[in-house]
Amino acid sequence: MDAAPLDTATAALARDSRTRLRRRGHWRFWHSGPQGSDTGWALAFLIPYTAVFLLFVVYPVLYGLWLGHAPSSYQQLFADPVYLKTVVNTLIYLAIGVNLHLFGALMLSGFFMRRNWRVRSLLLVYILPWAVPAIPTLIAFHWMLNGEWGFINNVLYDVAGIEGPSWLNYRWLALGSSLVAYIWKWMPFWTVIFLAGRMAIPQELYESAAIDGAVGIKRFTLITVPLLANLYLICTLLSTIWTLGDFNTIYFVTGGGPALSTHVLATLGIRDAFEVANPHLGMAAVMSALPLLIPLVIVLMRKLSKTQVQL
Image (cartoon, rainbow, N blue to C red; front, side, top):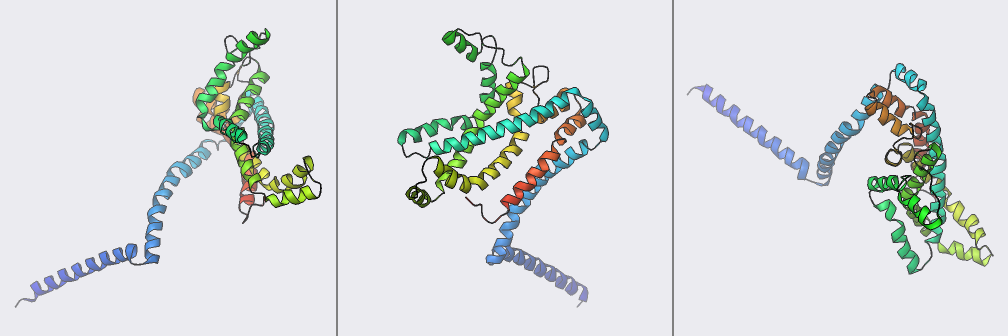
């Protein structure tokens, strides 16, 4: 008998055996035990997430850094007279907006701690500005501030006979109106955060303080403030980062006007990139915030890397 057919059949059987072993090993990898199953499911969830992260986070960031790396873009940016106003507006926006709405949220969280069904019902109404979509809310603010037939000026005239100002035609009035809209929109969110922090404080501490005579403002300064200090700091850092990148409020309330005087860095970057049609300049405007943003992120990550947030 010729040996060639036997060799061919033997090789075919060997290939079939190796294929079955590979399939069996693949099956065992996914299904043959806790360790194999965990590894398989980990890869199943990790690979799509990694692909999405690389595509929608890493690539845009790297592309943005590449767009804004040219020194000539920063020379052109710093020569723009609008840029200096924008930096001032951004710092004012951060200093006033962040501190006012966080301090107000801390105070209102104490009010909503009351065990009263009317107060709890009011809390549901209070959080509505944060719960509703931002863009329609801010557009409504814009039309209410219209100097000729806006809702606010009509109310002033009908109630007090006062001719209201042109809110969006003056720099500081327009910037102040944007701050009011921003605070009104975001204060409920931080109020809920501080309310949760207050509820985590053991009531035994307040009872002991009451026995020692610490009531009212002393109770707040000696117990609430020290125990919420770390939470307040983290919220301040996070709110500052969010506010620095806030685009919607200025864009939909004032549009950067009048005469480009109320732009912040986020809106100026969009304006330079799309309206001026200079993406390199727009990215340079956004990246000029990095000297402030990077330290905030580092401090925030260090605070969050602790094993436990002390309340």
